[in-house]
Amino acid sequence: MAIKADYHMHSSFSGDSSAPMADMAKHALALGLTHICFTEHYDPDYIYPAGEEGMFELNTDSYLYELIKQKSKYNGQLEIAFGVELGLQPHLKRQLALYAKSHDFDFIIGSSHLCSRKDPYYPVFFEGRSEDEAHQEYFEAVLECVKTLPYFDVYGHLDYVVRYGPTKNDSYTYQKHADVFDKILSVLIENGKGIELNTGGFRSGLSQPNPCVEILKRYRALGGEIITVGSDAHAPKDIAADFDRACALLKECGFAYYCVFQKRIPEYLKL
Ligand SMILES: [Zn+2]
Ligand SMILES: [Zn+2]
Image (cartoon, rainbow, N blue to C red):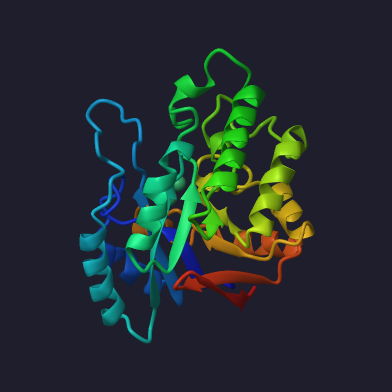
C-alpha cells in the first residue's frame, strides 16, 4: 500500500462511533500505516432527530487526554495527529473561530453536514425537487462556507451530498455544477486550503470517492497541491479502506504527493 497515512478517522469520542481509540490505533499499526489522524466530530448547532441530541458535541479535553496516551504508547512506530472534523455552518463564524484556537490541533477538516439546517443524510433534504437542484443547493452552501469560515486545513468530502440522494451519483457530474465547483476550488487554493480524498464514498455505494475524480483533477489543474487521504473509518475494519484505489486515482489526477499535518502545517509524502 503506497498511502501510509489515514487522515480521517473517528473513535468513540465521536457520537456515531463505538470504537475505542486504542483499537483504532492498534489496527492502523497492524495495517502498516505510519501516520493517522483522529478527526472527531464537532458539529455545533446540529439539528438532531429525536433521541440523538448532542451526538456531535465533543468533549475535547477527554479526547486529547486519551490521544496523548496513545501517542506516547506508539511513539516512534505510528505518528498520531490531533485532529477534528468541524461541522461548518455560516451562522457559527464566531464560535468556530474560537474553537479552532481553543486547542493546538494538528489538523482541522471543515465539513458541511448541514445545508439550510438539514442533513442530506436524511431523505427529506431531497424532497420536492430534482436531485440536481438539491445537489446545487448543497454546493452553493459549501461555497458560502469556504468564503466565510477559513477555520480548517482541508475541506472534507466535498460532494458528501451525492452519497445520500435517491439515485446517488448515477446522473451526477462535475459539469452540471462546474461554475460553483470552480469558485469553491479557486477560493480554497487562494486561501492555501486543501481538499481530501475520502474513500467513504465507495462504502456508501458510489462508484467514486468523495469528491469525484473530475473535482480532484480540476483542483490539481487549477494549481491545488494540498490533498489528504481519509477512510472516514468509524470502526477498525474500515481503516485505510480502498487506499490502493485512492493512490491510483490521485496519480491519474496529476498528484505526485499527499499530505500529513503537524500543528496545521502540511508535510508532503510521495505517492
Ligand atoms: Zn463528515
Ligand atoms: Zn468523518
